[in-house]
Image 1 (tube, one colour):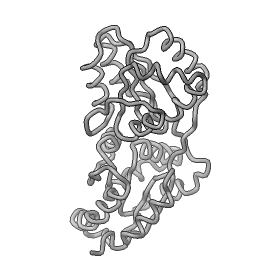
Image 2 (image 1 turned 45 degrees about the horizontal axis):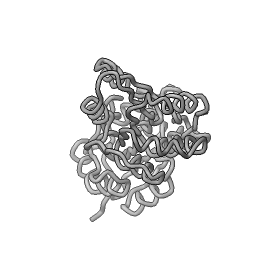
Image 3 (image 1 turned 180 degrees about the horizontal axis):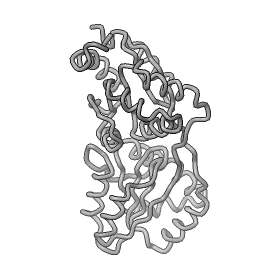
Image 4 (image 1 turned 90 degrees about the vertical axis):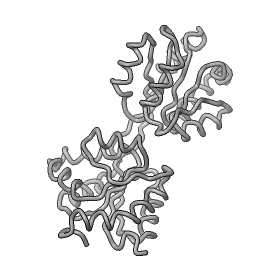
Length: 278
């Protein structure tokens, strides 16, 4: 099998950028890896003050952990204040949005209910509505961006008290030169495939394109590309931004994402854009 067969493949991966480039090359693609985000930890001092006060007063009924990285940061700082807080958490209803926050919780000796697939905020919302009673308090750890307003409105309309806790924010990487080159190449129609590992990646990519005055051209370029997503949460976020998803990895892992795209992208591109393919 020729796999990507020399297609030009863009990835916006940050944390595992070298591994992504190696995988694309393994499947006979020409990689362009341009990190589109960096995680900036926020000052949790005031957040933890308020959370501790609520926890010690027995005014927290559930905590929803939306991301692995945010879970580790929050629990590390909370335990550093007082390790007994982890024991208090064991008596609460803990909810994990998928495997990554679940694994992070386990490293602190905590268990949780993992919401059903596809592990989006909608499943977290449904679980909290089914589990909690009016007047109860749910704390939600955000995941790089603010909790969806629609989710907060729905929970509050059901009579729940909801506190959304920011742990970190996704910002542009310190070195934006690769991102600028990716914007230029996409706008020029020089790329064939886009691999997405998170919705925030494409949000930052489009935001940066807009800052360069290239948003319209980039959107046109994306419409000519085959876009592959790592899973439903990523696909939903991309769709809300107006980016069409052609392929979705299952299971939702980076290696499967690249393999799925390598297997199907050449055929999709040839059928949809025969004049530009190759």
